[in-house]
Amino acid sequence: MKSLFLGLIGSLFFSLSASAQVPKGMGKSDADAKKILDATSAKFKGYKSVTAKFVLKIENASGKSIGTKSGSVFMKATKYRISMPGQEMFSDGSTTWSYEKSSNEVTINKIDPASNSITPQKLFTNFYDKDFLYKLNGKVKVGGNDMLEIELTPVDKSKPFHKVLLYISNSTIYSTKVYEKTGNRYTYSVSNMNTTSVVPDNIFVFDAKKYPGVEVVDLR
Image 1 (tube, one colour):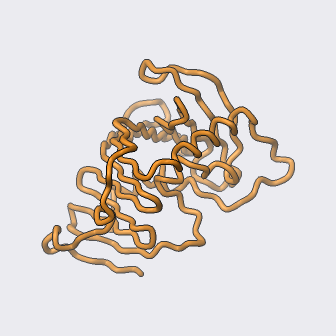
Image 2 (tube, one colour; image 1 turned 180 degrees about the vertical axis):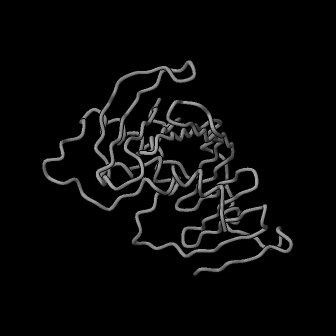
């Protein structure tokens, strides 16, 4: 299955993982940046569930927009569901379902506990701690709002990106910008975040009955 969803959102959610520790001599991270990131992680971990709207914008090296996708995300403990026009991803914490409407096909995978893949939850918590060097660039304006900009540099230089910028306000990440080595830039912006809604567990499991005629590719 050729999934546009994985091609776009994957550059953000699932390519940020790295297994390497910081090698000696690579430099140190910014203590001020760490305080902000730790506070942001602790705040997010305190939520029982989270729902939010998001926009994923893709730009080329010259800053020209080459695509925009909007969607919604639901998170609860290790479970998540991401919905975009024509595509959805479900995870109940042990299994993932990737659905593409154009082909009416769902691909099922078992989650490897030993893998370092980034989930939506990890993006808002402490994925940065071992995999990146980070520094506080200072205050900036984003959409007319005051934000703190933190720059992340991957320890693993084989990653397809060389820089990630986080924009944080009140210990909440509102925007993430990923700079690929190819020059493309992926900006993920969050809005309408709700941290008090009750999210039922069945929302994180793909229900084939709701997708008549769906083709199932089970890779478990």
